[in-house]
Length: 547
Image (cartoon, rainbow, N blue to C red):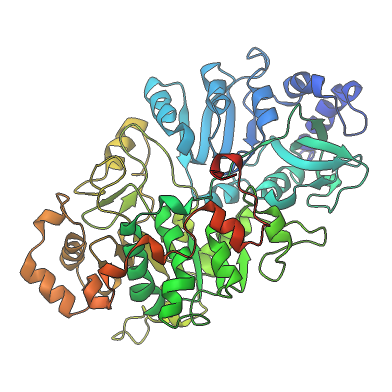
């Protein structure tokens, strides 16, 4: 017989911590002024702590409070964050409060992350995709404490997260059912929440924030900044990919290239007679540049990872399109959205900072350890997929009786980035960054084997049609422009690739370069988007240039 064992040590430790803080709690509610004391009493040295900081919604009050705790009491934390977005997310490492980080994306803080790794101030566990990070919360990164944000909370601890539910459910559940402590910052304490997004049984402590949590309009792109080169690329993509492969479901990464496509659907797409034939279903944040396509009847459904500032009234008025609760606000879910993107979509269209000669891409460049968020989930070919669609089946090899289809993974880039540096390179900067950051693997965002198409201002490379790495390299060279990679292109080889449909230039697709002007866009500026929305869209102040 084995010795008698206590099987509830986690539960007992949690109960002991909460009991020690009970004098500061009225049920689950605490006072704003006691936030620091509560964190010092509920977080132990070495704890695994998840701090909500996704693409848009930041638990900013709790992150600032965590940065203010006494390092003698709270130190060497193992932080787990989908997005490193605010300065205090890294201040805690310089102050010794935290020592290790597992994360997905660090765009706003990517340069500082790189510097801190070089200085030895921050140790990286791994850089993850969103789904990968969320999955590990249930296996080997089970959190001791989670810090999240909510719009409204009632006296029983029920949370209303509104349009920006995002990653809150997956974070909270991982702690709530394994005796972790769930601490919530609330914009407002109410008698009754509009709807219950997280049940109060999962919540331990609610602290009213001193100001609303930070929310960024990350997916808003002003149409007036779309260039004619991007219009041309959008026309090629619609003709040479969306139409060619009969794409029904899609995710667009954020960028002006994809914004151009969205604004070309009601105009150029209409000219091609594609309305009702392509892209009725979307997994994407509610980007304002989709409004004209929605209003003109192109889109049937949109599920979103998160909300977008200013789109709330428009979304509430279009419940046939968006996932909207009885309360009138959208329900978003970052984990489910990533799952849909990986397994349910025909196509992912994204962009990147570098593509190597083989077709591997990365947003990690010299001095910037940005990570990659959800793009590897969207831009992968999941081997577990079994359901077929016309687009997926269109990539099935004809000569293999046991062959299967493939998701379309499209990288859409101009040959030179905004920094005037070539996007196409012989070797990714990420190779060197791996050595500097002491990572186990090169931080590649989307691997060559998963990339099916590359679109540039020169044309489209249909990489899925290539039958060797040499042919794949030649196809990339053909559309890489005057970059060092593109200058190696052989005109005779390019001619052969075009004849075999492995490379297509605008004229091969029937795209008229002279038609590629900004006048073809369904909206020329933000004011046009407001008009399309019948006044329901309310752009953030920084995007308002009219009275």
